[in-house]
Length: 516
Image (cartoon, rainbow, N blue to C red; front, top):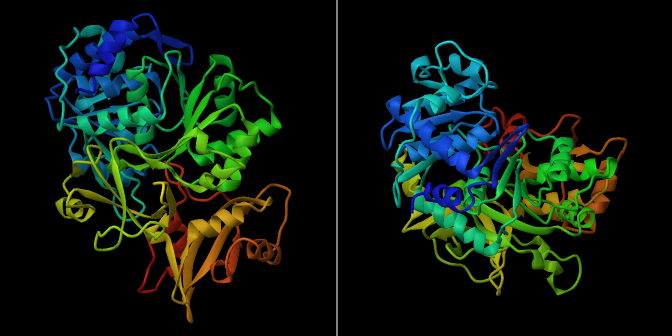
């Protein structure tokens, strides 16, 4: 299949249905498909050939969705740029993937003009106003005839998604048309969408979760409402006014939305389904969400960019606060139809059920590899199995329980401590707003368990109280030996994950051994 085939089909069978809602702009599917074909014509007229990379640096908008499909339609490879990167990181990605064309909106155009490798004559401006020397997005649509679809297919590369780059420079994950098609179709079998779906985009569109959503809900002919940025008031108001019935959020967003709803009750009755993932969620937050929005069906999706999306799903029936399924609230879910999952040891041998090992995935959703990094590709994909770097166990019914990132495991006095387990215990204390557990140097034990905490406004708690709280939940060797109470928020990646390497740096600075 071609990824663009879904857009052609949707425009054919739902021509008058609203495709996108962004601010005051509303466009139908027939209008969207026509604009995509004309924009593809403009991209082709600027010299983009099949296989060429096109980098996109922009905030969420309806034009972002059109751009993704137009680049594919022209035969190009989409390279979404992380909007939270520093100029040096953008410069690295530009040099790494050598895009034939650069597309930028009003929020990043000034930065883009200063980046090495961004040529004005090879840049399309996605904003409403005019920018000297840059091709106008809307003018390209107006001035070019629709291009016949020349998108790749099958194992042809569709996009390069740069990973968060929490250690060293980011890696470009190469995903094919088949990767993304199989991932979205497989997830849809676990999380079906209805004909009247109104989906709200909240996650940043450079992230794979949002990319998968725009592909999935285009195939469904759904109406896609786009929030330009994450703001809990904006999100809740969009759900209420646009009658949104489905969305995807990362746990950090869910926490902000839940706290907003406690302060400002908002009509959320239209919301029927919510997908969450991309970062670990605490059991305490999940329980709060289920009580705040009891009518909403919840789906957890676990996956990685290298897996082309969510390949493990926890369905609504396994989100239970009591009864036999209550134990599954801590599970990530079971493998989706297109992906085979194993828990393996360091030699890639499958471990017995209930034993902690590393998640490995095999199937048509596994990436083509890392762009220009053959050695790292060989290290990541072993005999067709993708090594995830995530520690987990699988029970006798195939439910997968994520324990931690393998690299986030703390070895203290010869005991393995998984930080996620400690974080889950701490997060259940009512005073704790957010927490991150890391290993810091210790002369006797090698590493000691340390907690970085931010408390809720107006609430105080001391180390003694937290130790007493943890004593009821986890073994003594797992409990934090030190705490740092922070006023400022945790450093976050663009995907909403806490950057633990940034938290570790002050403690490991100047030492030969570093945990990263």
